[in-house]
Image (cartoon, rainbow, N blue to C red; front, side, top):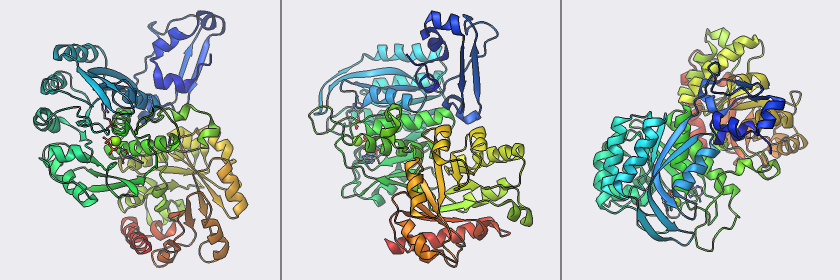
Length: 552
Ligand SMILES: Nc1ncnc2c1ncn2[C@@H]1O[C@H](COP(=O)(O)OP(=O)(O)O)[C@@H](O)[C@H]1O
Ligand SMILES: Cc1ncc(COP(=O)(O)O)c(N)n1
Ligand SMILES: [Mg+2]
């Protein structure tokens, strides 16, 4: 049996892991585990070195302890294991977070529908809740099926007695198969008790409509209005999910934080295996919040996770009904299957790609983090730190502060060339050139989740990058030279970002090339060689948005 660090971080507490190691192995070998970039402490950006010598127990006094991010799900069991508690457990495991469970109902359910529901007595729901909350440190509570008003009230009381960092409410009412899981009597409980406590509420179209007294929600514009109305009812953040939006080629969700409305789009995966998408999304949001992500970042990661899992599982066949489950744990499968797919990478993030330059920052008296902050506030959708003449120690420090800024805005941060710096600060990935470390070696070091971009000048280089597991290619020399070769590269299968001499005045024709893989433009001087990085970024963002709308 192999004991691997990833497995440890996803499934077991340190102590139970230790206990699971055979006695002989512990005594004869001692056990050293190096968790690099462990998800356990992602937000603290720490490397954890755990050493267990001989048969010394981890509970001895000189042993430091590790707090694993912890989500408690309060939901119903699905015997078919596609949705409910079972989906929550798998989603949290896949995201590297511990998940405890309070079961509110047991359903007899499969891919055909819900054949029966047995509601757990209220005092026993209370007992489960007390058992978990009085003993364990829970970071985030996520709710799913709450089949009676009494259970809603019990939840409310316990959350007041044992406050947690965040409450994610998935107001489950009807399963995708059309079966009722929580009747209208629960609506009042959601409205009065849970919404005002919720950090985020994640209704699908039917649920949003029910919470808003039956208002019709049929278009993205209806979803936007619904998100605002639900926010007015007390939820701090609202995500109206559009999985069931008729006639939509994309899977569109609307996120509203009381200030800004975000339209989150991903491609709609053609598959029958969508049972449990809602439960998974909410658990994934809870898991990311438990790890310390901002709300927008958590929502984006969760959506990307659902899309990736659906895509990975589109052909699996479980059960004979119309709605199959999908595979949450695709990451554990062989790399050959994964072919380097990224959970965290969304090609549309390449839209306005800001690449820093230390010379320009010096010229205008900007620190790296001030320049990055302005770019992100101006609408940059991804940032790359390209610092050629900086001490490694300073680079790591600068990268850490830029990472905080970027995470707060849900914008990925990549490091140019320096895999070591990316690892040290737990950046979202790297951008490498043809003379840097080979992409497949970078992939092996960074693992399957990080973003890897490669600068390519020829189709052969692009093919190599693709084989090595790159997520996108940077295609250089758009201006002033080499346009024909550039266009042939843009037709390549990986998402492409165009680089080279692009500025506000000439960005439009690049976007208007209209090649589907061309996801955006990367710029350095257009935004950073200026006194006001914010204004220049805003201008460029406006041009790109206009050009994209014109192409559509
Ligand atoms: N076919 C699909 N392809 C990609 N994403 C999808 C698909 N169906 C649903 N989603 C996404 O899954 C999440 C759950 O949405 P939805 O299915 O509407 O919720 P529920 O399961 O509660 O009905 C949303 O982020 C939605 O956009
Ligand atoms: C126990 C339980 N909880 C929640 C859902 C909703 O999931 P979905 O909307 O994907 O059917 C479900 N079907 N069963
Ligand atoms: Mg669904």
